[in-house]
Image (cartoon, rainbow, N blue to C red):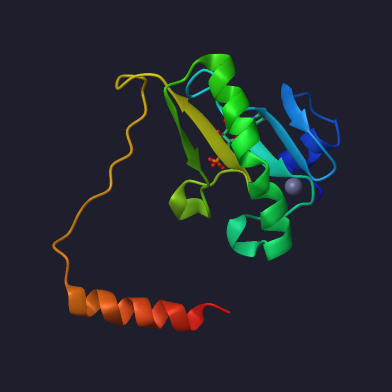
Length: 138
Ligand code: 5GP
Ligand code: ZN
């Protein structure tokens, strides 16, 4: 897609530090290097984000994650890894071509903090919400 920075990386029009490539998927180092080894895994066919992918395209992309993540972990000696996809601006997406972040983790002070606020569970409301969502799965 025109003006898409990741399509331009895939096409070789913009340089990147590639770590894995096949017919469907490319993995390269994120320019920000949030932590050492921070990697992006992208589908070669443009899709705005995970919410717009077909099952087949998502299967192709996600199936490559474990082996690429293991390679990043073993090369960096990371103790763990956050695997993240931001979808739409409200969720922090800044580049609108699907990408999975692999963020190696080294220690508690490595600059990343992900917090999930917990609320008192209302089990009736949870059951209703689960029902509503499950009806939307098509
Ligand atoms: P998002 O915020 O959309 O989830 O993540 C986009 C990521 O793309 C950011 O972490 C940013 O550092 C990375 N990025 C943006 N432009 C480039 C680029 O030209 N090259 C590389 N390698 N990474 C980029
Ligand atoms: Zn693109």
